[in-house]
Length: 219
Image (cartoon, rainbow, N blue to C red; front, side):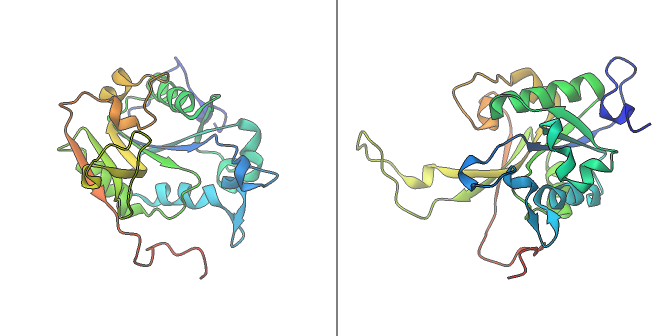
């Protein structure tokens, strides 16, 4: 039943281990589009649909949950076709994450979660699978990028840029640990920073200088 796929609540919990949660609640005001940028078309397909299809093609993804404004479903063929759970977005990203985690906790028996961004279509199935596999030995997997430019700060302190990195999506977590630790009102916007200091982290430093395995730009 397509309506049941939108959330089963207390009816029963689906015994699913690996869930991909796609964050699609952003408005993208700076993008200057009438609709949020994740629903704009690239080569005739909504940006979010590339992310959903990558999750569908992932051999280790058991279910997909999209956190979004339900009114935007009309802009995505993948969302309109059903078979994807939808959790309502919050007023801020952190509350959208919280809503998504609550939805999964209520409807699934989830072991691992991979969090992706609807506005980042250059993701591919093997990467998602790799993150789920890495969670066999880690509490979380963080996508990061080495800082190559110089950094400054307003207090003019001297620091080593090699001690820092830029975080990207996707990220993956042991669900129960993340759910227990996550606070939508935390001062940090980096989800992994809410885990205990002793949590085992895997840093996946991606290189963006080579062609993407999922070249959708047509350039």
